[in-house]
Image (tube, rainbow, N blue to C red; front, side, top):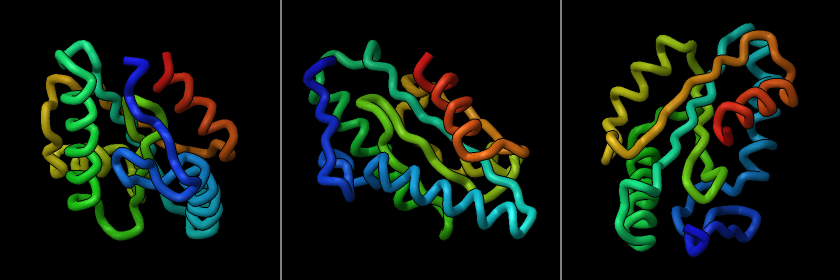
Amino acid sequence: MRDIEFRSDGVKDSLTESMAPALFREALIREIASAKREDRELVLLTIALQPSHFDSVAKFQEELIEIAFALRQGLRGGDFFARISDHGFWLLLRTNESGAKLVLDRLDLPRQEALITQLMARKYDEPAEWIERVDQLFFN
């Protein structure tokens, strides 16, 4: 899977045209500050596509593109996402965990048997703590 494209111009991912990871983190930090002021909940939804379900890199990349398209079409205003690794996305959802489960169901993502999805509510974490917890969940 080393051939999977994972590059950005600092603004968007070249394969999926999703937000670049650095911009996502900046937007995430701003959103956390806003949520604290407004006393509202946030959830990060991670979506990892399992390479073992695909017989070629091209099919895997096509699926990443399809997922990004579904996310662009299905997310509400204020929610945003980025491709964080060669095999998946992080989504910031302005809701609680039960609301995030409803969003995931509503998205009706393609090839769900090849996806690993996980939710991580912010609770009272500071940005660095939350990102670290999600990193541990997503990359392990």
